[in-house]
Length: 273
Image (cartoon, rainbow, N blue to C red):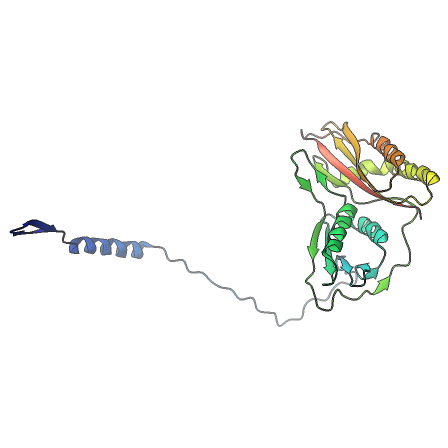
C-alpha cells in the first residue's frame, strides 16, 4: 500500500500486483491438477460379411396398424373391415399380447374426431380404461401414430368377408394392483359359458341386440370379491347388465400374499351373428 501526502489530505491506493500474481498461481495449480477425460468415439461400420439367413419358420411380429382412409373406410393390417369387426379383431389379437401396441395411420383429410373415436375403439378392445380413487387412469394399450403421408395410408391388400360369430366376444382383460392379466383371464374362463348364456337370453328379447359392455371386479388380497359392477355398456338392455353382473359375483380368485387390492376389468362385444 502506498500513501501520498498533499495539501488536501491523505489518499491511499492498494497495490493489486501481488494479489493478481497469487490468483494466477492458484489458477495454474488448479489447471495442472484437473483430470483430463479422454473419450473415444467408436464407429460401427457395416460388416463385409452377408447377414445370416433367416430360419424357415421365421415369423415377423404382427404389427397392428389401423388405417383410416379418405373415403371413410378402414383397415386393420391391410384388411378392410367394418368398425364392429375391427373391434372384435383387435380384441382377439390383443388378448395374448404381453405388450399391447396399436398404430393409427390416418389420411390427412380424415377428421380429427374420427381419429379420437378410433382411439376409443382401440382402448375398449384392449380392455378399457380403469380409473382408481385418486383419479389415475390405466390404459393397457399404447397407441402410436404413423407419419402422415401425402398419398395417405398404404393401400389395403384384402377385404374381410366375414363378421363376428354369434355370441359374446371377450377382449383382453385389464388388471391393476396385485393381480395379473393371466390371473384375471384364468378366473374368467370357467364363467365364459354363463356370460354367453346371459346374452343368448337377451337375444330372445331382441334378436338384433348388439353393442359392447365391461365387467369390473374389485378383488381383496384373500381372493374375496369387494365389488362387482358394469361400468359401461352400449347395448341398451339393463337385464343383460344385471345378469352379467350376477355371474361376475361368482368369479373366484386365489389368495395373494400382497396386502393391496386389485381391480380387473373385462370388455365384451356382442354379436347376434
